[in-house]
Amino acid sequence: MLHTVNKSPFEHSALEACLRYARPGASVLLIEDGVYAAARDTAVAKAVQEALQRVQVYALKPDVEARGMQNRVMDGVRLVDYGGFVDLVVEHHAVQSWL
Amino acid sequence: MKLGILVNEGPYNHEASDSAYQFARAALAKGHQVCRVFFYHDGVNNGTRLTVPPQDDRNIVKRWSELAAEHKLDLVVCIAAAQRRGLMDKGEAKRHGKDADNLAPGFRISGLGQLIEAGVEADRLVVFGD
Amino acid sequence: MTEENAGGRVKKFLYVNRKAPYGTIYALESLEVVLIGAAFEQDVSLAFIGDGVYQLAKGQDTKGLEVKNFSPAFRALEDYDVNKLYVDEESLRARGLSAQDLVVPVEVVSAQRMAEIMESQDVVLSF
Image (tube, rainbow over all chains, first blue to last red; front, top):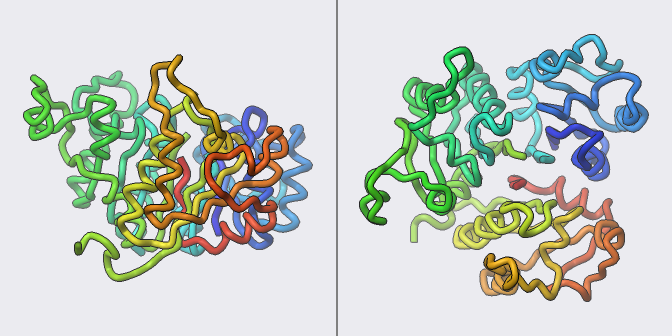
């Protein structure tokens, strides 16, 4: 399954909830304010690093750049554009949006 | 693939409509079909023709109308959510005795069944919301 | 009734509820989708996670707010053959609630079981 998370991890529980239910082998795409979870050296970086052991984590590049986070993306998180977002949707059997 | 899109938030207030639009555009550019874009909750406000956004920023309503015209997209505004929030087409305005209608070009008002149908017909349904 | 069973396919639809009622409209309007959607005879499940579990709390009395109390509508789900209601165990516990505090019978599930349920769906609607 592809999971999208669009909320900042510092203000909302969406990322935490997503990671609780995402099964090994799933993909998590951070979009909108969710991309802040892709940044290095944050209070949630460890949780994201741990998640990377069992799921793929992507961040939507236009959202990362809009927020000035493009030089802070942690290793292991892959940036995709909207075309890549579409590909991820197509590649997975369903999409779950964590709002 | 056939993709369905659900937009739960209105224009400008939340990024959902922007994300959905860019996603739809990218999907069409890749040769996929967008079988329906369904607007629910405050998402129905994407269908008002009365917005006059600042000139130096994107015109969210207009670009949905233009994308619909270019690709013959089915933009559906939920009737129940629209009635709550004051979105009317000519028929609805007449039916409810309102003196104006405000539905933007390319959008149509219909029931929630259209959302379920999109879920059944599409290969994938993607939700954009708050 | 050609609108139902469009294409003759039956898909697994999951409605994910994570928001409390009344503070926002999502709880009410998502229930409206479930009720209308029931006519399409798909394989429907509802998940209540986080504050979403509050939607099912007994004793909702909205007279003082002068807003519609929509919690009785959950009892109508059974009549629409929507009876797979899954509630996250941890979310209930964190809020000091148990299944006895809810307006309808539900299946209280662990995170792992909820994850399995989610993974098996064809269409996931979040509000």
